[in-house]
Image (cartoon, rainbow, N blue to C red):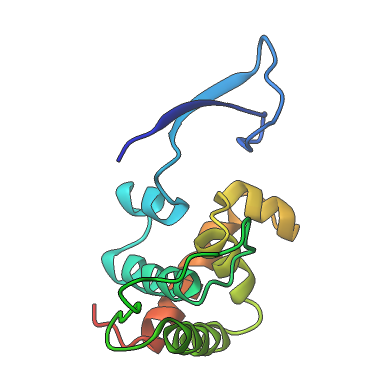
Length: 155
């Protein structure tokens, strides 16, 4: 799905909330994740992408993101996804997520969470972590390699 939006960016390429007359703008597909963006441009390989997608899937299945609304309605079908009830599936996903983040290590888990789980763009993650410009991609690829090794993904 493509949902294109025009967004303003500042001189460093970081998304800006204010649009100025002489400022730059970029058209982005808001349905595309930062990891998908990197994969589409050949900046991460298939193995790294698969590892990141597995982490994101566990993050979403475990429902670790802040909830915006209450979940009022129970599932009619019992929620038997893969033979597990919803609660057991969330617990299993949380355990897998925690094990994967622990395998990445304390220095690499920050960039994994920001880019893959929170969906931050690399420039925004670098700025939030206080890193130099363009250092995030190198660290992210190292983190994804370690994650792929944890998931035992072959080249």
